[in-house]
Each structure stands twice: as C-alpha cells, then as structure tokens.
Length: 160
Picture 1 (cartoon, rainbow, N blue to C red):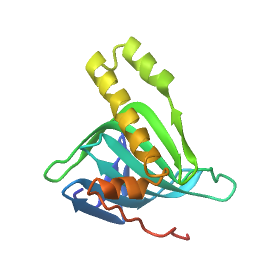
Picture 2 (picture 1 turned 30 degrees about the horizontal axis):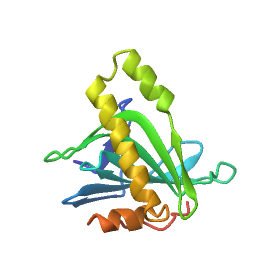
Picture 3 (picture 1 turned 45 degrees about the vertical axis):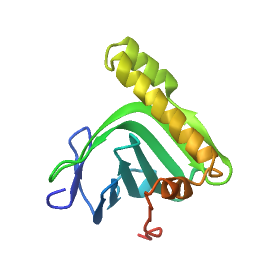
Picture 4 (picture 1 turned 120 degrees about the vertical axis):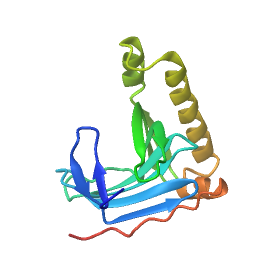
C-alpha cells in the first residue's frame, strides 16, 4: 500500500484512490485502464478467502452482474497485502442469483501441479461457503458480509 499503488500479478503498478483497512479486510478503489471497465473497487476478505469486486463497465461492455468474487488466498502485511488467485469465481446478481465460473481452470491447475490437493479443496470449500451465504441472504453480498460482522461500503459510480 505504500504510495497508494496496486501491483497486479503481471507487475503493472497502478495508482489507487483509496485504501481502507478494517480488522477483517482491505478496501481498494482505483481507476482502470482496461478496455471494458474504467474503475474497480474491491474488498479483500482474508478469513473468507475471497476478493469481492465491483467493475464500473464502460458503455457497450456492461455485464449483468453486481459483484465479481475471486476465490484465493489473501493476506494482510504491515505495509503490503498479497493475493493468490485460486481460479474459482462467482458472479453475483443481487436478489437474482449467481454464476459459478472456472471450475475447469481449477481442475486443470491441480492436474498440472500449479495447486496442491489441499489448496484446491480449500478453494472448493470457500466457494461452497460463499454461495451458501449468498443464497441465505437473497444473493445480497453486503447483507451476507454484514451478517458476518464485515460491513462493506462502496463508492458510487465514478463518471470519468
């Protein structure tokens, strides 16, 4: 977090508008140089093994989703937080449902030795836990996280 930057897995360093640290997670909001979205907000939730994100899509690229959840390993450091993606993703449509994505990628990663069996099993368990929690709260991510003592807040859409 030094210098309000975010470094992605490919080593690209991007400026961050806001970091907010809570005892249960880290919030980040930053502009994006992606062709399909121009702003990104994320909560890293280490105890759940989840990163929940809102993508602010540009016209012509809007998707039917409210949140995108990555399953992985997220760890708080003194100055730097780290993340390792475990391939599984959940697309959440508030009040309507979800899509579970990339199980094939998890299986391929396990077969190729990129993940060991306990890590792959943990990713599946985290996904099942998240889907059950979302379902029990009408697919309302903020309500589910709030029930766990993780009250999430998000910036309004930034017009650029």
